[in-house]
Length: 311
Image 1 (spheres, rainbow, N blue to C red):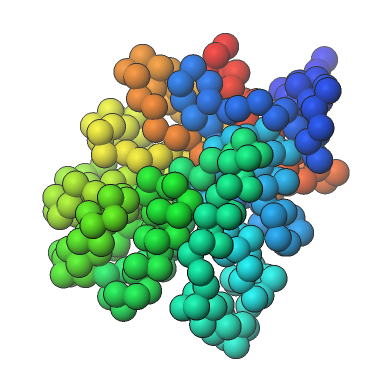
Image 2: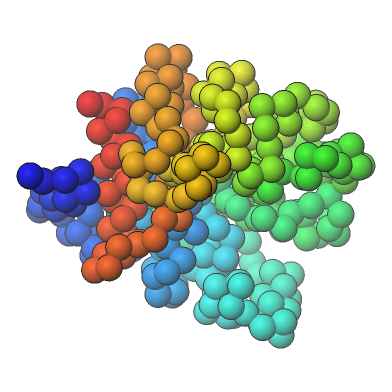
């Protein structure tokens, strides 16, 4: 008897027939019944780092949509250090910071053209460090890059829910840049939010303040229905991170899609029924099985999403 994982792997191989992608994934656009399925490029952190490697990986996973991590994007634009940020020394981080102050923004327009010519669109750029406490120049750099890439939003972590009022001055300052550039700030969650976090003042500070909802992390932290939050804030959700985690009672594990406690099929059914069309970006965080790699696992996740939407 074939198991679910073997079935999806074989489906991926069949879908790849006749495709010239370097990693063999299906290369068709990944918008299914109007729902964009993409990937946050953090998912490929286990793969070799290099200029335009990310483009190969996204195409190899059969995807046409993505949330672009700034370090992957900046490497394509000519950043001077060929490493992941958490592997850089202080000196190397300083080199990248100095490069940001001098790089011609047109380099990012060239990156965008390269990706779009290959059929891949960056709908979001993640600058996790963007904050209203930075200098004007540092904040503007983030927005200029996002604009050059044609992105509609910048993602960053939600402020500490316990002290959100303390962030008001910085938040309102950041909001002015978002409104000036016409680009949203989308707040990402790990385990720190609950059903009432966004009832507070944060979203009231600007119509450009939106939500990047990580449904898997929410399930790992809370016992209520995450789909209720999606319905409640559907007009403020900019995108959703797709992963499958178990509840606290089941160990808060990261698992392959369809094997945890996260109601992913219910999410897609809700989106189809209500006409929600925000991007759903796969974030690979479970352990990659021996003999596989991140490109293949993201492709398997894509197939799960596609089958859940169109099946």
